[in-house]
Each structure stands twice: as structure tokens, then as C-alpha cells.
Length: 448
Image (tube, rainbow, N blue to C red; front, side):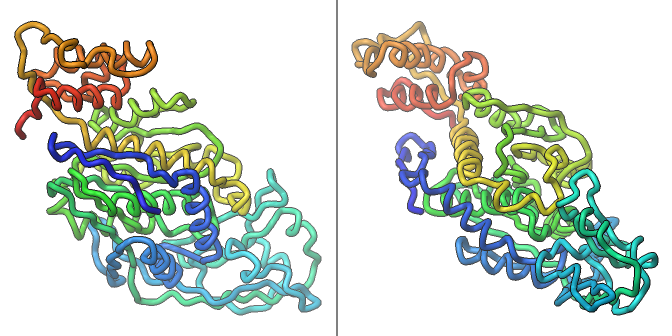
């Protein structure tokens, strides 16, 4: 994907433009989801490494490994888990549950086991979804050494009495927690952080959609100059962000804005969960973009439950980081089940999430304060060709109104986003007006 970038360096501002090829971005994002779908991931192990290796084929990625037993605040990096095979054989010797058919069949982080047992002894280790009898649930046992299998409720009901051979060919031993970072330097060292978790196995919306969205945002931003530096973090949920924060505590002060990206490919409306700060610039930027997007959306308050925003927003950090989703985690029936598959996530929804993220980046990159160079009464805009310069009456009126708003509030104290909120005009319209006024020397960027 080659983006189209428009240089506005003479005015000291960055410019985001939707790529010409945006019609195929959704398909490319979906293709990445498809390629990552079969991999059995967890909070540690070779599945995470393989996922990061494939991400590294698209964007520059630094991979970090942190040894098991490493203290990270109140937590400890766990043992590394890997799995080769797992199955349940019925009394006739037939595999009735087979890890090779679906990696969701095994409770993630199951300890190794190879035994023969009667059905009644096996049943406590079986997990189903009675309300969705044909779906396989996703279950984990990260911090409790046990084992189990997941299968459809219908399949479980068909198991007959008898002896079953049970095998989980896995390992749980000292190793490493692995995460990846893509760092894109900008004009300043101040950072925008995008984070997406890479621990879930064959689940598309939660969270291969977030991974794909982060990859394609990074892929676009690395091809242009940016005001901010951008950091993309691909780490296992909870323990990954805790580990990253423990290892990078001193540099978290650089993070000026951030988003957790998750559940980005389902058909639901866009949802934004605000940061703990409630009115951080990123909160306002997302609210503005969603308000003017023309689509249905919802904005929710911060809560200490959900994805890794609760780690970045913990009181000891209180970073300006929210969570951008479509349907929130736990709020769609397919969540944490085999129904969160390649049919549930669609290219058009991935692309819509991508476009909205670009618009959010546009606001963050260009939310600057200006100084009116003719502050005593309105300057004559007509003689400078600034009135009536666009086609369409409504467009002309919006542009002319934007010129007046920008001129009136460019006193060095009001940035464009605040002017957008006051005026009700779209940020891009005000940005266009500011560009025009700068070209006619009626406006200058306020020095930082």
C-alpha cells in the first residue's frame, strides 16, 4: 500500500490523506487476519513468536523476550507454554476431540496429561456453551496449573459411557514472554501509542482484527513524515502490557496520546471507551471524529475492566489512553467462541475502522494553536480571494464560517480541536481554513 502524502511543512503542520488504494485496504487487512487465524497463540510461546514474525513481514518490528520469573510490579512473568497435539479418543479409539481440527479445543495453558479415564471422571474437564450448542468455547488457565478441553455442547451430549484416552502434548516450563514493538520516529519525541494484544488463538474479532488494524496503520504512517513519534505495541493481554510498563516506566512520560485497538472487524457500531482522565485530548479527538463520521456510535466512560487500557490508565501511570472498538468485548454472542471466525469479521468493517483511525490521527497531528496576524477587527477576506473560492453554496458557507471562527479564536490559547468543539464545524474544515489563512499570512502557528 503506497499512501498519498501532501506536504504542508511550510506551515509547520502534518497532513493525513486517505490512501488512493483505500478501496483495497479492507481486503488486505482481511488477508492478514486470514493468515494469522490458524496459529495457536497464548500469553507466551511459539505461537506469539510466529505471529510477530509474520507481522514483521509488513512493518519494522523489534521483538523482546523477558525471562520467566522476572518480577513486573506485583506480577511475575509466567512459565512459557507450548503445545504440539491434544485429543480425546472415545472407547472405540476414534478422536472425538482433536486439537488439530481447532486449537480452541484445548483449554489454553493446559498442563501435559496422557491418561485413560471413564467419562464421568473426564466430564469436569469438559467445557461447552449450552446456549450455543454448535460453538466451541475459548477457555484459559493461565495462572492455575490444570487441563481441560472445549467442545460443542451437542458433541458433548453425544459422548457415550466408557473409557476415554486423554492426551495433552504440551510443555509448561521456564522460558520467555515475547512482545513486539514498531517505533516510527517523528519530528518530536512525544509519542502516540497504539497497542493490540496478540495472545488469543483462532479468534478473529477478538483480536486479530485489532492486530491487523495496528499493522496497517503503522504501514501507512511509516511512509510519511509525522509530527509525533508512533509506537505500536503487540503484546499478550494484561501480563504483556504490565511487563512493557515495568520495563519502560521512565519513558512513559513521552506518551501524549494512545489507543488500545480491539474488536475492529465486526458489523457493530463504533465504540470508544474513554481514558481514566475523561477529557484527554485523545478522548476529545475520537469523540469529534465519531460525531462527524455520519455513522452510529457510542462513547462509554472509563472502567477498570476490559483490555489493557486499565493497565496504562492505572493510577500510578494515568496515561491518556482509551480503547477503540466496534462492539465491545463480551457484548457480542460470538465473543470467545469458535463463532468469532473468518465469517464474522468482514473487510468492509475493518476498512471502516481503519479510516476512522486515520481521521483520529489527522486530528492529533494537526491540533495546533495559531496566532491571528490581523487581530484588530476582521481582515478583508474578499480582496484576498478567500470568499467564494469553493464550489457549492453550502461548502462556501461552511468554509467562510470556518475562516471567521479560526480568525476569532486564534489567540494562541485555543487549538483547532477546541475551535471545532465550540463551532460545531468539522476539524478538517477548520484545518482547511487555517491552511488558507496561513497562505495569506493572516495566521501563524503559535511557537511551542
